[in-house]
Length: 218
Length: 242
Image (cartoon, rainbow over all chains, first blue to last red; front, top):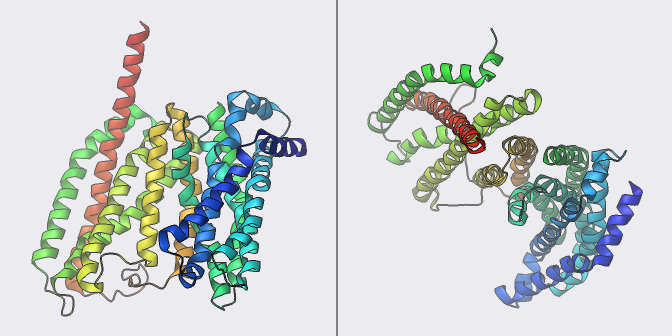
């Protein structure tokens, strides 16, 4: 499992395109917001928590179809499925690798991007905390979507249609943490709920994704 | 004699064929009675005027929109556990009806909301969760369309329905935290004395039962259609190999 995890990270880093792509997308998205809304700092600061969360969420979505697709095409997935690793373990390793290569960089990049949008200084800790916890659940839910669509040719669009509704609770809670922090309310209850949601995802999703993979490989 | 006997498509077709005319007649007469009574023979509300009468469409549709998803969840579980094809097809047959009910609830609500709240749409938790339910239905239907193999499609949509139920429920409570509501709380409850006046209550009940029988009629009809579609495809495949 650990070997698989390392292999996936290495592949993502070395193959190029996948790794930096999400970050570049995030940067461009955040850059577009002032173009669309206008450079008024008060307005930007007001919508910054939501924009940063939506941007990170969409950037996370971008690399999802790679999670299983390449392995499914060259037959590695079948080999892995017949290996002694349980399918839930395989899914968890894949999701964890996706988080390391997408969720973690996005979380770290959110702080400077937040500064560009004029996020009030109290918000940074909570932004990083909420994204750090929330992107874990985004990666796992996304891996479930990838497992469902692995057998479908050109399933990218369908994948987003399936995954985005499942992202709703994470987005609401995550953006709520940052919004509460910058408006001077106590954000810890929302962060606790977000942590709970992530733990629920960690418990539930690997089993569901393994079921979906099994159905797809029958 | 158990309910599982009707997992056999032949038995299901025979039974549903016999039930269907009665169900059609029953739902048509109930809806006609309930809606005509509700629309033409109840007094206007002293504050809301005649707009209140949209309740006879809005409440049953909203009830059905949620309960159809629940029925799909049960049917999906039956498919995953006991692998009865009729069950998977019933879930598939129910989804378009559910999405239509969701749209009816959203649109009747908007029509009522304009004169009463002064707006067609507000980001109210209940309204928002119905829009969320709508996208869940969309994803479910899209997945049925996209997967070619029937059994795989049934498996994948069932898994999606299960996971979707959990996240739809989470969304329902997450939106509460995010905005205060305009929508009133539930009026009809099973346990408490209803605050609604009897002259509205009885036609509303008839409408709700009418919507339930309408759903049963439609879901039987559509399940029969899917069974026949599958049979005809099997016949075509046999012809092709000959």
